[in-house]
Length: 288
Image 1 (cartoon, rainbow, N blue to C red):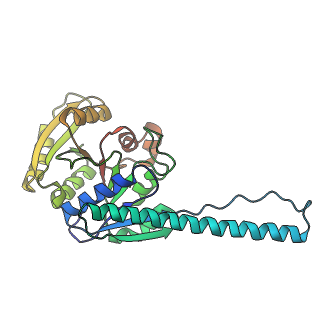
Image 2 (image 1 turned 30 degrees about the vertical axis):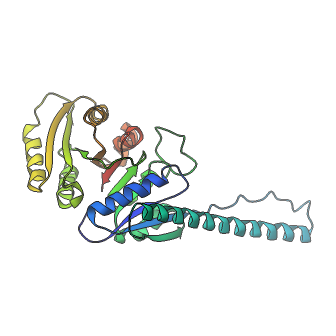
Image 3 (image 1 turned 180 degrees about the horizontal axis):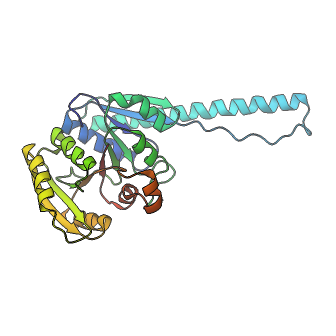
């Protein structure tokens, strides 16, 4: 995250994660001294075409039917707008009740990915729930839009998957030595977010070859940034090793790069990012 005073943007909807999204976004805004903005996005889906009743209805009947359909769509749109305003007001009151400054509130129309791309220049960090409205009970599933949003953005994305109870004191930085992960280290050292936290730098290897030099270099970069660093080199399946370490060490947030491999490789072998999002029991901060 850069040092400019761009927004911490919280995407809210009617899902059970919305309150937690607001709480995490408020906490993040305080840690990096950035303004908080609340976004509710309305996606308008085309109504299904009515059955062709031209053989059963006269001209007047068809015109009346079309008029009623237009009025129905207008009422539906108005209802969605009012529901969204109520969600934004609820989120605003939640922020104020916790001592936060009055956040800017915004309602946009269209696909969420398109809205976020349009706003990207003013976003410092995006905070979203792991699943949206209507998918709350689909545990171990990633929201239908989440992957497209993460891929479209060139900003860090915090994926929230649990209530905000206490601020995390430990974060785990997943590191594999790639160019993308080294770039991630630079982003970490430049952000005030990590100051004062216990940062666990974790690498998982699939064989017994030592990774000491790589890990020492990475830890040195973080320590030069004034961070409290604990290094760990693990072996085995990457996803399982990271999730086990998170649970054993009481890690409150996982920091990692997102979608570092080609789409073809991910099609063949599956996406590590999606698996971590689906199975992690703590929020993930995805660096882009």
